[in-house]
Each structure stands twice: as structure tokens, then as C-alpha cells.
Image 1 (spheres, rainbow, N blue to C red):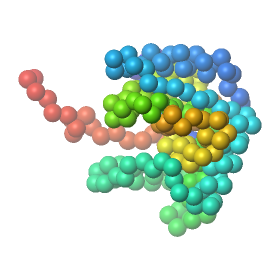
Image 2: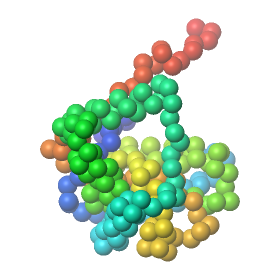
Image 3: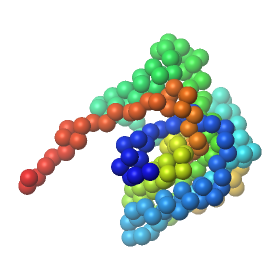
Image 4: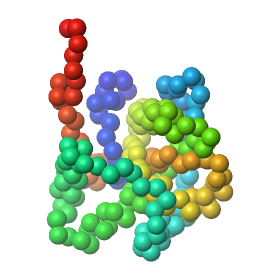
Amino acid sequence: MELIQAINERRSIRGFKTDPVPQNVLRQVLKLAVRSVSANNAQPWEFAVATGDVLDALRRSNQAALQEKQAEDYAGASLRGVYLDRSKALGKQLFSAMDIARDDRKSRSWWLARGFSFFDAPVLILLYMDKSLDETAFRFDMGCVTQNICLAAMEYGLGTCVEEQAITYQNGIREELHFPESKQLVCGIAIGYPDWTFPANNVVSTREAVDNITKWYGF
């Protein structure tokens, strides 16, 4: 797949086929991804890739934490103003595609729970880095390698969804994966073969026009 095509066609996939993803394919995706931009070539990223029974255990842990309303180990930044407006616009697109009404609490709860089950993807990639690294500086690198994973996956017919929900409840992750306290989870990526019959997969989020967010100097 050509790079420009991949950038234009990339979208968050929230419905996957049950087909397993070969380990070698995932290894190739990661080998491409780690060619990412890295400040001072520090390469702060590390990966934990889960599938099968291990992934099912993580799903069960997340669902239990959600039902019990456990305190969150990680919460994303709150949004205001135009940033919140853009987020709400995407939510409306998704609920419309899934035919979920505003007052349909049961369906909205189901949708929320899907996120904590990694949208039933056959594989989850967890991205993490050492706690000794400066979070402000090196989260930029982590974002770059995350984008590379999402684009490289498309070369192999895979879809992805980057999720903060994946690391909201971390006790289960640390217990199931024997995850060391010296490491800091950054995000998760649900990955697998897209189910194109799943309505939400046809949603393409909008982007602000470049000229609305760019100042040009010297042109």
C-alpha cells in the first residue's frame, strides 16, 4: 500500500474478524514501526503483545473492574472548547452508524464495554516505556511509533484502534503479564482483520481544514 493512500484511508477499527493474526505478521509490523522518529535515538518504546487465553483474561479483568466501578489507574486528559466539540462530533457519528439512540442506555453501556474488551480484537499491543524516562519528552516518541504501527498494519490487511481504555484498569495487566512496576503503560492498540460489515468501521472522523489551524510566514 502506498504511504499517501494509507494515511488517507487509515481509520479506527472497532469491529474485527475472529481470524487469528500470525505472530510473524505482527513481528513485521513492529519491525517497520520501530523505524519511527526518536529523539536522540533513545527508542523509549517497548511492546507487550497478547492474544488467546491471555487476552481473554485481560478482557475479563477489565469487565470486572468496569462493573465494580473500580478507581481508574489511568484517565485521559479532560477536553474543553473546540477539542471537546470534535470529540462529541465523533461520538455522534459512531452512535448514528450503530443506530444507538441518545436515550438508549443499554446500548450505550454495551458500546462502552466493547472498548474495555478491546473491541473483541484477536490481538492487543500494549505500548510502554521505562518510568525513568521523562514523560513529557518521550510521549512524543511513543506517539510516533504508535502511528507507524497503525500505518504498517494496513500493509498486511490489518486494522487498528488506539485505546486509552486498554490501560484504564492496570491491575489486571500487571498481574496477568507479570508487568514490572518500573514500566509505565502508555496506550493499547487493538489489532486484527477488519470486519467491514460492522457499521462503525465505515465511520471516517473529520479533520479541521489545514488553513484553519496553520499560520504561514514568508510566503
